[in-house]
Length: 145
View 1 (tube, helix red, strand yellow):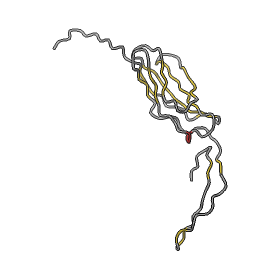
View 2 (cartoon, rainbow, N blue to C red):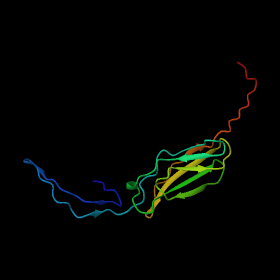
View 3 (cartoon, rainbow, N blue to C red):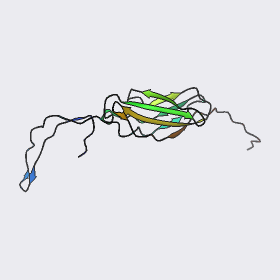
View 4 (cartoon, rainbow, N blue to C red):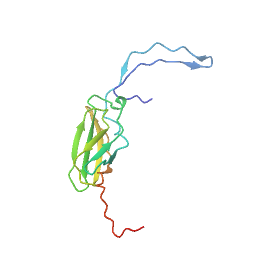
């Protein structure tokens, strides 16, 4: 049986034999599992611009039962394809988006998000590609019906 880290459990036992199941036992004392680093990183990491000067990075927030220890945080990093990494530490687990401003129009960005807590970092993050917004100007040459 798998028990999640940093959780308190109580157990009851029911015996089963040829006569049938027994009544449940009394609760055991509380059993607390040890804290551990996060087992995974947020899912659905995406980046998309809503105007030419931004990119909104979004992900699925991780609920408290997946934090595995106190001090949970997201470590969000992003960089233009030919630029330097910028990282920010987000300590509110409910946050599920970050706005990057200013950006150049329709520029590709490498994006990662990793989890960490007081026990250590989560697994190595996967890199996603996002784009800042388009500028909306189009140059047509010899456009005809």
